Image (cartoon, rainbow, N blue to C red; front, side, top):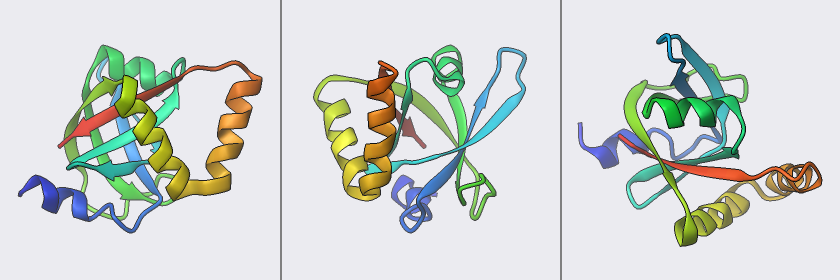
Length: 125
């Protein structure tokens, strides 16, 4: 399956089910917001979150379109997560604002109050 075809199933969803893996191999599914840009899927989370720690330790992930509770609504595909920073991180944050609006602003406000850092990951499928 071509990469652009694989990502097409995500276009009309607000959430993906992101499966990251513990050191013992146990999968941890989490519903997360995302954007698709330049044939890549991007997610953003607090830098100290469990999913970010797991992606740093093991870049192998599985993703599927989902609802807000993480129930999959499409084909689960495998990918590799790589942290991005600099201008790309800023661009992805802007795209997330456009997609999620006030909901995204509330998360960012909470993060600012708690003085939390963010991490952006590109997921290559």
